Image (tube, rainbow, N blue to C red; front, side, top):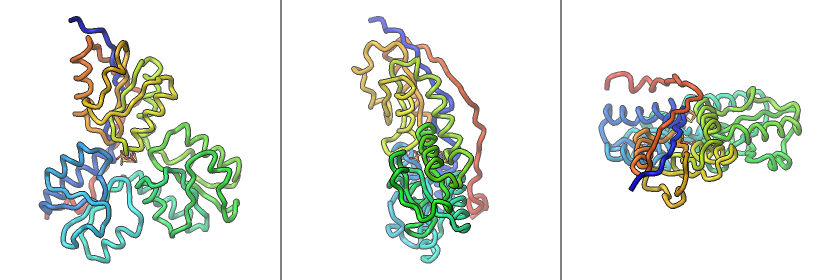
Length: 316
Ligand code: 0CG
Ligand code: SF4
């Protein structure tokens, strides 16, 4: 049987960002330095394949610090933690390594600075997401108000409109966040905040790359996990940019081939926590079924790298 022709647009940048790369390295280096088990509070990054691989090497994943024995090292995930978590680890005299992405830590510092200046904080983010919990947890309970949508802006009750600042989650939709920030600036003209928002370079670049390919695609697949905020945003961006069939897949076995019957062009990208081997697997699955031509579409180049914490760079 002859295979149908298919153009596969491979977005770039896609996949691992510098913060994810660093967080995974931290777990690997901690295992080398201290041996197994090393505890990790929350999935180090939101990807089952990555987590399973580290578990095989001796990492133990837990949700709360209380689940860790005091005599084993613990690592905090890339998404960040409330201030109370390292404080509690220190109180228990635990060895801990913070794998919070430096770009998330930057937002933590911003929030703390505004608070010190007497400003009430608004956080734009998704309720319950670990990054939002971590950033809000930099300040005392009740000091940060959460805003998720433009509608929330209309109803949020602030102490003093003249004494207000905002920060954002790093993995939001650029366009939706711009609308929320604009609504905040209309309702609270004195609000202080970053020039645009706190969305990171990796989130920005992956969304831009999707926008470049989506209009030409009959379908677009985002390799990523259902709990990965930045990956889910890529699906939404693809749909908004004109590709009505955009889906999140964890790996090739999740692809619904019947839904893809008759397509001539497919887009493939991946969230910041999805390893390249899973993208290769998805591309290979298309190659097995179609007479495929791969076209790489690169909209930006990335050369960001973050060092691992010093404790892991010095010998045991
Ligand atoms: O995109 P979120 O914040 O959900 O995290 P993920 O682990 O998927 O990727 C980057 C990080 C940290
Ligand atoms: Fe850091 Fe952005 Fe990657 Fe999150 S998505 S780990 S903020 S670089």
